[in-house]
Length: 155
Image (cartoon, rainbow, N blue to C red; front, side):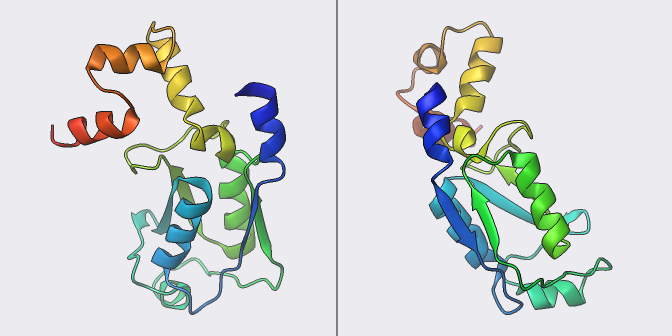
């Protein structure tokens, strides 16, 4: 992790081309494929219906959804806050970036690359007094985060 991972994040990029006829769920799927994270799109303060197109969302929200001709480029070295602000500024959309399981919003100071590598979970485990996430997962009786989420989803 650390320096090399953050360095290579600068070169991982995805072009996001939002068009009025594109469904929200298509953009969310592309975001998850590229970054391994969940993109939450809101209509006001409520999650938008993922089956809507952005044009339909525009018709159903008081805030205008803009369609700038500029291409939106998101890189793995951008912070969550930078991504949220960029999408808001360029398209007038409110979004949140959540973990891959869509169980919590990732802290704004993490980069997409750090969040996709679960560095936020490493930090949380250390804050809770564990040496690392492997120690925490072992205590929980699971081998990885996938198993942990599957086990805890049922609770």
